[in-house]
Figure (cartoon, rainbow, N blue to C red):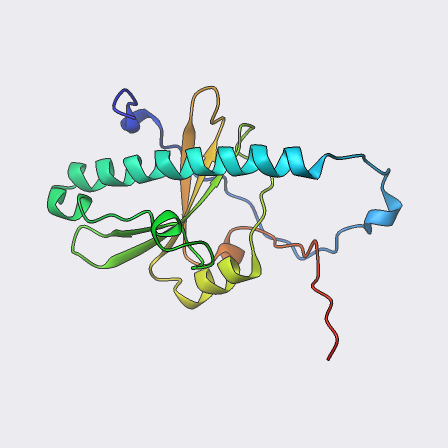
Length: 168
């Protein structure tokens, strides 16, 4: 990541008015054949690369703010502690307050939809004052990113796409 000019990576977050709407049912759309195993492997690889990029960016950000001692303490929590925390990177503000970062990466454009787990959405809501979503896009070509601070549903429409069915 040493060759990346992080100063050129950051872009403005898209400004969209969030309008409540109901998604059309999947059974009304044309069926699609997918290789879910290949897709999962590709997404995992892209996600891990995006998290490594965001980790390097975060250390650079703190160094630029004159908080190099905090940059050394930034942790890739999802890799060190495991998934399920509700965020990927534990970092800091320049004054030492904790910052929780969830990274969402795509090889496509900035408006490409992404998946958020119920746990991530809940964590973002419960820790809105310290939560940041880093959206990396055009990642394979020329990585760019924007940041969304606070609860995810402040910035994005969240459409439920699956449910867990249980007995009792």
